[in-house]
Image (cartoon, rainbow, N blue to C red):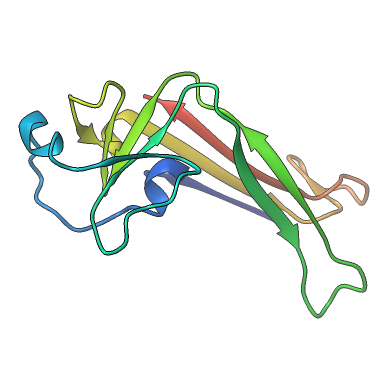
Amino acid sequence: MKFTTSATLTLIAISLVGCSGMMPPKARDMAQIPIIRFGDDAPANEEFILLYPAGASLPVSASVSGTLLAQSDSATLHVATKQDVYAYKQWVSFDGKTWQRSDKVISGKFEIFVPGTGVNGIDGKSPGKLSAEFNLK
């Protein structure tokens, strides 16, 4: 059993998606919004830009559980971006000044395979797979 989908938002935009106009924000307007580095406290009840600094460890929790299972498991993965990434609602910037819709510059793919199925179908031995891939377009 395989589930594949093209994702139009990255993990940097998933938690920040909002409904705004189609025009990118202007640099002068964005300069008024505080920038919070990943891992720092966000300001209460205030909009902010989230910065994922290049090379910073970004933890991602992965888990498999449910009433069907006698044993559950989880792990924390650590990934890092190659360059600074700024996220604000559905917008992304790589310099903090020029903003683009995230789905225009980043693509993603998510895959889920249950144990015993592989790329070529049911094989009875392949491990399960939970996978996320994020790419620059």
